[in-house]
Length: 380
Image 1: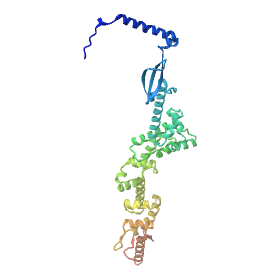
Image 2: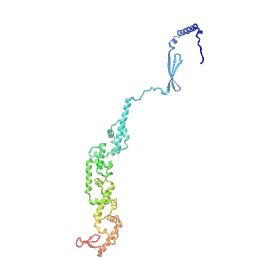
Image 3: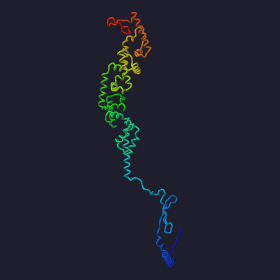
Image 4: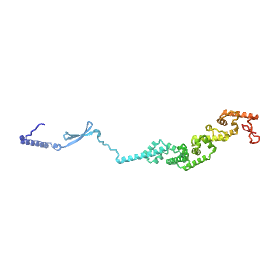
């Protein structure tokens, strides 16, 4: 830095004072000559301009000369003069509460419908909520006319036709659950009455859970009082079923609802029992099930076995005769095994010829005097 020496002893104070007076006099002269200048020389004004994407506040004096510029920020940050539509805190809270209530109602109703086996109603639930219906019971009430709802709770239609009151969904499903509990308590097969359709008739008939229990008790009683010959045959044909009292009770409670396999097995046992009883046939489960598959009932089979029983001797082989299996004998008795029928006819003809010649096929039975068993029937 340079060294500056201020020497005040050489300063002409008289000349300096004179210069100051001249400047002051000149200023007062200007003010006197231009009153406007005297009044406004300290006044300024500002304006906001946009320059290069920025808002600039420009301050000028009364002569238009720029005194100061201030950067106010980007043009896009300019406050919007339009009214503020943002909800206040109270309104926002109320909106949030309403949205939460609707979600709660949707969750309650949709969960209930899912458990009831009703799907595909979400859009209808949302539509009802949009209408301001937020009570879960009211929503369910408004859904009752949908096709899905009518199908799921279709027993109500039959109840109304009988003059019985319709059941609300919760009561309806509660009844189904009580029926299931009764079935479980009695150890009935899990596939017996296991769907809403299975319980439909019970609800249509206004059957209470206690009455349902009485019907099951009756089913067990029918098992214990069933035809011993049928039960014995069932145990021989199907040991795992014949010794299962619960499965048999299910059949006696409602044969239509019972397992289809069990239906076939019970019917086969009934046919087998009648075959042994009426004709002395000792065929097995396979032959009995074949008759069931051919459409024969136990009652129809009994008539065929009775006819075969009247010719029991013909179905029993004697020395040197062609052997027939039990299945062939059954086929001949029912008429669907033509070859077996022809074999029996040959046997009958041979025996008649032997009898006519006094052969070994004729013997006195001793039943009555002069009665003779020919092996093809009884002759006098």
